[in-house]
Length: 210
Image 1 (cartoon, rainbow, N blue to C red):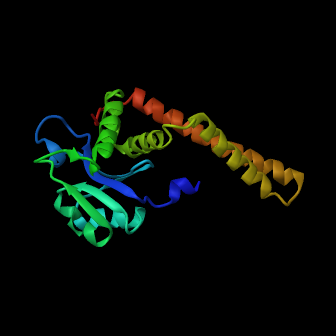
Image 2: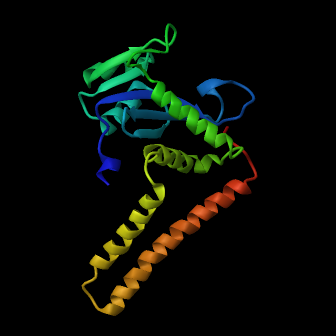
Image 3: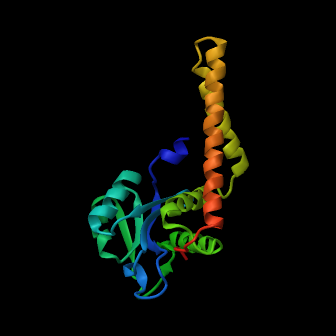
């Protein structure tokens, strides 16, 4: 559980990307209905993503301070919002106008995740904008546990909720049975919500992303 909530550290790649929006009209992050996503990739570790309203220095630095350890080594492109990173850790920037990377000076790992995410979203032939944050969470989860057995992870969470509920019982057997049923009900509701989301994707009236 600590793996999920600890701050990123070591060598970290930072970048921002845009998802969705109509294909007609202006291109790039300024296009209508585009969603801006900021990401950080801990090399040999996990990825962090956040949907942001803008990509100003204040916004991106707040995300970095809240989710990355001070003193880490940060790799970014030449985007102006990263200029103040030098006050929080070692900042190494890459000028993509001259080269995309040399040695350890690159953000290829994070750019690879953006490609992976957009390619996977294309298979859905569009997703609802209101559910996009859930798809992004799924993609992040898949990446962070790509080398692990995801089935075992879900089984662990089931046991965690079940036995957490069981340990809390100091009352009668009747109360215990009631709370266990409540725990199972929560899990059943979560599965039901996932099925509803899947149905929303299959029978959506309007396509938005990718």
